[in-house]
Image (cartoon, rainbow, N blue to C red):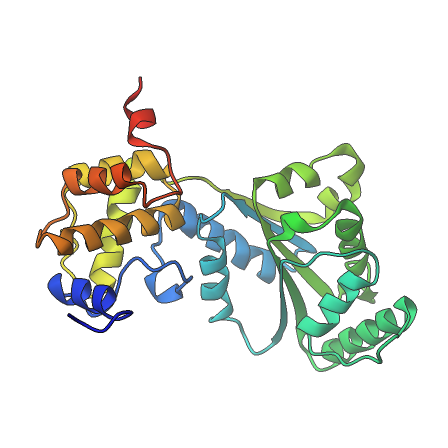
Length: 289
């Protein structure tokens, strides 16, 4: 018996001739699959930054690849940009500003008032502008922000020097974020959104190419899954990358356990029947007209 904790991960990769597991859940830019929708989302992000859009909005389902897309973009950021990344921020007035200061490594005194913290931020933005650097603030999982929090962020885009805005916002979140921004009472925020894109789910063809791509990046041939297996994977996961990764990972583990070199439809169905995959629809639901 192999050592517990390393057996499944090492042996199933070795069994399929892979250098690593291709379907982990940790966002990894080296594995990013440039589907047509991800290419368009990336183009919108780049346009938003280059055009100095006050607010850029990117939305998509849970696990659609938004965070991976962000990480890939961050790896290519110019040195003329100062970037702050905030994930899962919550809280009321003042607390959100603390998140902003932390993301930009701006020190402030414990117990500082809102006005004192705002002055710290404003001084920092003016300094960066004088040094020829633009400040970009990214909020991941921005659907967790309250309407008051979003309005507070909008107010930050009013900070300017002459005709130049000193800060750009990129808001990334689940579909409900888009719904909130489009509410009548958020009209002022919506008017500041100069670039936006919604990441849709992948269709069945894209799912097959996605699976093939990740297998090749991991050192495989790309044909380790039977075509019919990819079809059921698309149906069950609804084309969401994170769910595809979960189901494919289990399917390769099951295939390794019975020394099956190509993951078959029957193996994927066995994973679903055993109930070890919680993220998607059941086989019974998918087979119902």
